[in-house]
Length: 307
Image (cartoon, rainbow, N blue to C red; front, side, top):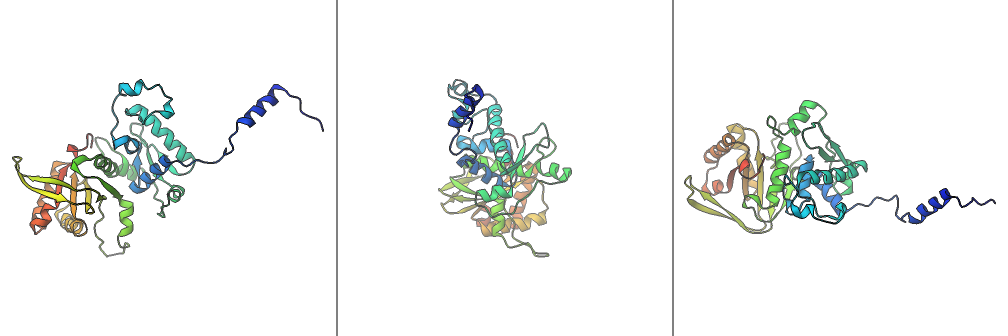
């Protein structure tokens, strides 16, 4: 049998074969991959800048410019700490999202050029992290997509604000103690099945399981502390992110529901008008001092830099 001459092309192929790893062709599923997929699954839809905060140490928001320590880091980009500034962080997130979308774990879309892309977990991604949840697709109609996900001066995305509130609380915002977060998809599984003409308890935007003790103060208009509300480890704190002004009747249904199933309720309101409406409902609907003290009402812009 004739032997192929040792041409330069043949030697090159031999070198490539020698360098080929024994696990070539396999997919390495890293811990960070699972974190990304689970974040998307728990929050239904998420934006890439929120993912940048989820992966950052301390869940810190991105800075406008890279710090001097980051610019002076001599290590290779793939070995550097998670970037602090917006531009480098978005580049890092884009690579991670592309990898996971190419492998079928995520779907990524960017409906608006002036806003970061959104992503969601596919059925394959849900199974990969052990979640037996139905796949939820992006809205098909543009007007539905715009109403739900667009976030700018004219539109406010409830999904995005919930995600940002989750991250703000994860870094200890609003004085919240250490906790674990339960998102709306996990909460949905704990509620009774939907039935026609049967009203279910209100589904919170998130539930915190407190791991440490905490407290907040009830103050008068002049700043005088009237009372301190103590929280204990193991208690449940319901989170509401209120973006629209609900009717008095609707609030009269929601507030008792939340307090019936949770130890405390925190309402983060997008506007001062919404905050006042919730405060009025607290006064009119809740009948005891104990119920009223367990409901804390906050203005979202006091805790998020860009609501």
